[in-house]
Image (cartoon, rainbow, N blue to C red):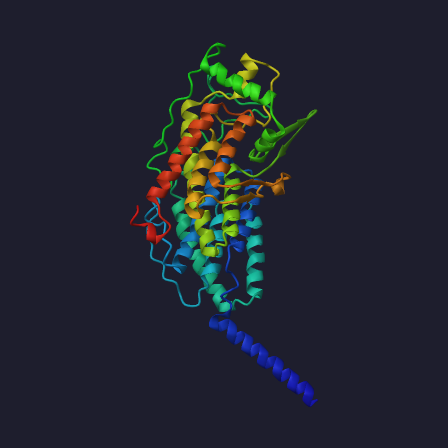
Length: 448
């Protein structure tokens, strides 16, 4: 009996000691790296795919949660600089961190709160949040600390959510749809689904760093002509011959960077959709991979995701501004009409005008920000597409990855070369402008 009493006393004493350790901050190593935020981002990607958001809209959904998580990280480390007062219309607000707030958890709570406000399938995000939070609780974060941390993170999220409501997105949902023109040089819906033009008014969305959607206006596309001796015809012939003579490596590159969120398949009389990651989602995946490979903590991961998402968002705005200005015909339509009526591209043609290439713009914008953060060379083992049945690809720099993403659109048969070349230039300018206007490190302020 005495032995039993002694054992019970020791157990009770151990429980008291453990509780005391937790209350004294011994839970601080529960969240150290960016694994929880990466997991939340992967979940958000899956929801974006499920809800079938277009590439431009998806870039918006990635951006605001990443900014919210980053703004909490700023409060944890004086080397980081708030984006408030730097991004267009993002009003400054002084957040005082209450006692007993665990900022890594608050950052995660800010991400989940903001992300859930921007999607349709809210339960899919909240269920993932609940599982993550339960795991964190079980690792020893005291109840009082947990509750105050989540509440504080959601307070920061509310500020970001209010900021998001003023970017003209909700108003744009009621804008007129794109009206197809009969002009022979203009974009026409393509088979098999003949979908209407996606987001024709995206240039009216407030950018984060750009002065305007048309700040880096591209040179006009090559003058349209169906004359076989014309430059435009030769650009179409280049696409035609490239697809007819693709190597296995070129096919692999095209499929790896396809990132078509809604590919329509037709088998006999049956039509069904295949949903995949968006181009922006692919680059957000690369940012997460780079942060882990570089050993970044949760704050450094938040920085990489926030800056990358801002570059992607502005890249889509700049690109879509040109797309619906030039409204250029796609290679599939042109080649079928003037060169070979039976020709098909390797990839399914996306439902929006050709010029400039979206992949080229956003990939180069993202590569600029990632190179700024991680440097060059930087070995990337890109496993982003493994979940969608594709193998990894490896690169020695973000610029190399961006170059491959851009040329993949020629290999896919969905862009002429000028859209790729001038799209890449536009993306580089967007990225450079962002880095010149927005700083995430206090030590860089003097440089800007």
